[in-house]
Length: 196
Image 1 (tube, rainbow, N blue to C red):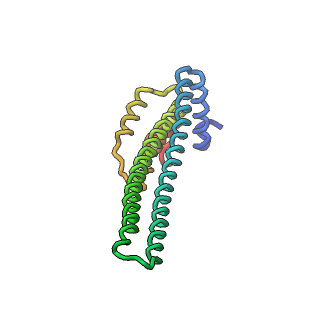
Image 2 (image 1 turned 30 degrees about the horizontal axis):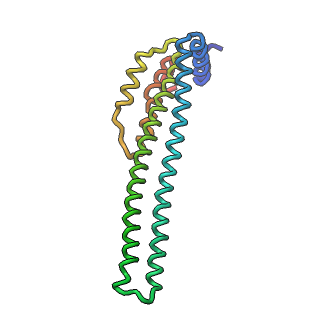
């Protein structure tokens, strides 16, 4: 049975295997692949660290609000049980309540800003990881035909592509490189049509 008559998955795996052999025989491609795989591992680690930090900051916000609620409950409970609460003695609990409110609002504001910055850093790390993953995939698909100059242009174009923020589609837009770039390349390498 010839390669043309094999199922598309088999053709793709055969092409990938031959490209990996070409990469292993070319020192420049092998070093590039090793470097990008190392960078990808580091990028994944940074993504996990940012994700963990984001969750920690979120938990800190909830803890601050919880502590504030408990403190206000204690102050209001003490005021409610005080038998000699007059205008002269009411300023103490009111001052404590006001200071706690100001401190909590300020702390929650700072934590929220930190959370937003961490989420933005996380998105940037995910984009960088996807770019490196795209380079690795493209190198593995192209093998000895890999063109570094075309890769740099494609990376700049993809990085400068406007993204819709705040929508669920923006997560898939970042991964659009796989669908828009690698699928047509793999199909053209294997001579497959989009309908097969």
